[in-house]
View 1 (cartoon, rainbow, N blue to C red):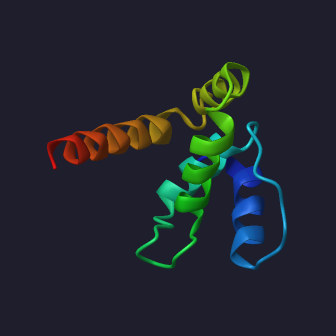
View 2 (cartoon, one colour):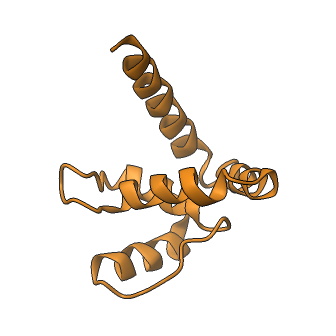
Length: 100
């Protein structure tokens, strides 16, 4: 799983409703883990992909410093294959949205 034990621990907390904080330091790891586990809105509203996307849009990308932190974390060795996949998914989604 992308993010190894740290990501697994946070995903388990999410699944069991245990509070934890999504931060610019862990949002990329959580987003990649959620993609790997297919934790989509179709499975359950408010699932982890949606929560991390909302955090990225509202918080992490609101300032240059936080955006750079999130991007650097996404480019770590253990996240790189999944973060590239997530990027391609976003590119495809944005293209479809513009064509509509």
